Amino acid sequence: MIPAAPVITVDGPSGAGKGTVSRLLAEALDWRFLDSGALYRLVALAARKRALAMDDEAGVIEIAGNLDVRFETVPGVETVRVWLGDEEVSHAIRTESCADDASRIAAIAGVRRRLLARQRAFRGPPGLVADGRDMGTVVFPDAAIKFFLTATPKERAQRRYKQLKEKGIDVNLRNLLEEIARRDQRDQAREVAPLRPAEDALVVDTTGQPVAAVLQCVVETIRVRGLWVG
Ligand code: DC
Image 1: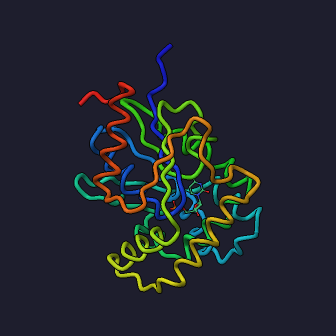
Image 2: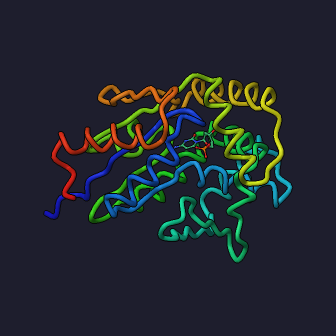
């Protein structure tokens, strides 16, 4: 039997630096990359486009099961281009309102079930870096290495503020801090696949650490575990 391709999971709350670190890590290893949050955001966006309420469970579950999406990785570019049907939605899925909708529909068990196989399908040689909330606990429990990135709520809000401003999205820092706290609470308190570190995860506090330092720490761990072949 061919052994399954190795997976490195990077979980944590929003603004902990997961997105940037896991994307750069996938690029450095030349592995595949899964931005699982984008899938939840896409379901939420597709639901909005059909004027569905986020608590219309049957409608949202149906959307999650028939999502027509495409991810396009552009070498050297940090963000992944995302398509919903024929429409590029790379920017539309990054707004705070879409993140809020995503956090709501992510609490629906049927939505998570529908997205499970789609997420697992990203696994393939030479390996996969998977970014999310439940990558190490539910989607890839057999991952070779599991990271859980955290940072103080204040720092995470400041990072999100900077990221959104750079993308030309207008936000207010205080509102952002409140929204992030609300989303964290919802993601941690939900019954299905709540946000929490896997028992065998390495928790990395990124507060006050630049991306390069976090990446170096992650890379060192991977080297020590013998997964780095570069
Ligand atoms: O990582 P992100 O900010 O793009 O995720 C948006 C929302 O999607 C987040 O609030 C919770 C949900 N999510 C999830 O429940 N499970 C994942 N694996 C990824 C994201």
